[in-house]
Image (cartoon, rainbow, N blue to C red; front, side):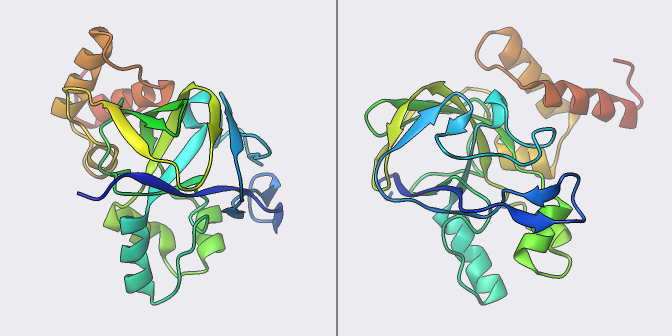
Amino acid sequence: MDTASLLAVCRVHELLPDPEGSVGVTAIDKRPVEGPVKVHKLGLHGDIQASRIHHGGEDQALYAYSQADADYWANELQRDMPPGIFGENLRVTGIETTGAVIGERWKIGMDVEVEVTSPRVPCATFQRRMNEPQWVKRFTEAGRVGAYLRVVRTGTISAGDYIHTLFVPKHGITVGQWFSNPNLEDMQLLLDAEADGEILLQSDYHDSFEKLLRRNGVEA
């Protein structure tokens, strides 16, 4: 297995006009930065989210995407997929993002610790950014969504830092698995893990649990 490491740290380069979006601009244009970058509870120092209703907050402080998934899209689309193109803050290698278990914890560099929280849900802004027809549909069907991260311990990170897996919850449900096939059995595993104090689910999960129960004709 390859050594897990941080290939690039990306933050907003400039706000781009997005007249079709909810706030008129987008911060999806992330690009690699050189040198050490401070990591706060709400993400990278100097990074922003244009629409804080749909992005950001402590449960989505960072977005990580793997080089393996980027390589898949480079082959599919026959174009380069440089770090930041997916709007990610962290381009990583040797470690799963889509295949990371919900609640999994990593140590990046000397002091930063993060926790995997949820999958990325593609939106129309993302499709406009990629300029690919039916991008939301293609991205969804491929299921290579990457992972949002909660910052457990702040500090400083740089491209080239090693990533160590500190903890993997026993429930085994990955962000990709939940994104592509949410079901009652996995929902119960996540609820049990939360009740046992093994993980802390962001509130969006409980909203999706209620919808899942209704779809299956089960009273909450």
